[in-house]
Image (cartoon, rainbow over all chains, first blue to last red):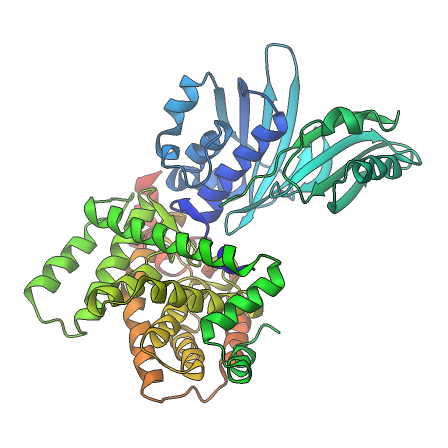
Length: 223
Length: 285
């Protein structure tokens, strides 16, 4: 643990996992959705569902979805700001076997018919991890900028993407590959040292025909 | 590598101060350059000071808590407190900041949100009694962080894993070491102040009423500042923990692991499970 993580983060109380972590999860889900949030269903799991009111977990999640960082005092009144920003949300609880005690599922949708499901957990001290996007299991902290590819499990995808990043002069901090079975659907999470993600999405998409979709996610966590 | 004994030895070998050693080691491990670490630690102190000001200027309320800092302030102004003016002032600040946290105030988790009043109480309580240059308070905060890093690595800083000893207990230990540093104590005394504090809170359970960071968290913030202060005084007096500080921290980890789940932040044991605690929870829902 870094010194600045022991003395930190700076946050709106009362709970690093239930408030600061919730704001981070909302913000990270918003970055992955990648456009202004219009409709989102929020499903609380475990202790999030049990104690969200007393910890302001609901305010923090919605604040994060509206772009507020964990130390933004507007979180206290985030519902009003989110409504003004045109965000429509509903908050529900759900029970899922084996779910992390502090976790949440977001279901985004918009008028164009696009939908996205994002699942994440607050793992302590305000740190978070996303564990699922659209049915894929993966691990993504959102601290560094990241590329997520969805592709068919075929030879050469990792090499093609790695080569393109290398040519672009980008250093890979971590790389994780997840597949649903040999030759089946696969996802790859690549964390980058550099925060800039401009132009990476089309660049990566064009590297290999097996790649069906690419998400480029800006890094966060400056506090 | 994560050891208080090693930090103390390294201070002796290099001639660097305790905070300089902590900073150098952190830079080595995190890859951040020392100047940016120092800048962020400085901004943490600014944010901490701001949380103290905001907490004391209003009358923050949580779902259950509120008003304790004002009571302590009035008492401190009208009496010669038994436990000394420093302890009462530190307690007033700790109660205020911790209550402010419960009211969704903006605080610095140090090391956690539930224990966020303790370090501000001890550092700014010291600052009001013994004017210290700001740079010195940043160094003291670095000392506290260095102690917290070792506790995080050898034990834990999460109540859900180790009970309240890992949150308010750790904060008090970190603050005790910071106070010893501020009073010019040796690196050895700094590390023993932490050990003496941890031995006094060994086994402290995390038992929040209704699962909220309010009861008993706020009052533990208000009382453990005084425990940290007396342990700092003991270390400055030359008293040493018979068990080496690293071993004390290791014991804290084992004790945390032995705690049943009901006493690790689930709100189902201890104070939370008293008839009144249960009634309060039911009234809230």
